[in-house]
Length: 83
Image (cartoon, rainbow, N blue to C red; front, side, top):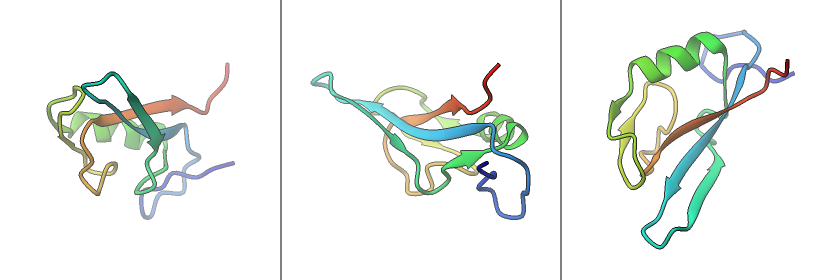
């Protein structure tokens, strides 16, 4: 079981974090965010609530936990919780 990547958090991860972008030629970039690969539900909510920027391809979004290297595009989440 993966744990949330936020420092000091011991919660189980609910999401895998992906960096997502779509280039002008239509190529899609979707790779794991190595700066914060996993988030628990609470930190995912906080991450989105405190995001600033344009959540669109080739945009730039600043997040409190993810995309700490400032890549263009935005964060997407893949659920690790299966019903």
